[in-house]
Image (cartoon, rainbow, N blue to C red):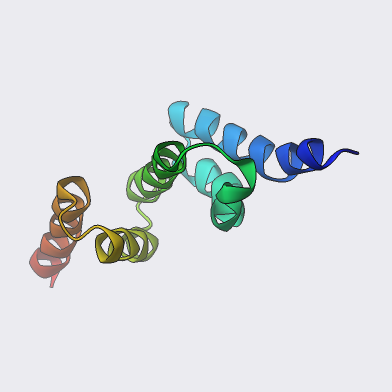
Length: 103
């Protein structure tokens, strides 16, 4: 099997099936498929913007799947790299304000 085919099978297929699951309203399945390959996205190549989109989809799946701890962790990582990222900051504020009101 060629290197590109191997990477596509190992990373691309789980990522694509995770995106389909997320778009189909199945965030838990999306996380199950995408999370194991999240650290391997650079193997697919593509631009930084394309890899960033996959990161955003993973965060969205965690938020939709009500995986608060995972969502906070992913958002924290994003904010550490991009402290001025409004999208991430707003979602982190929503998560932390929800935690404060539940206490």
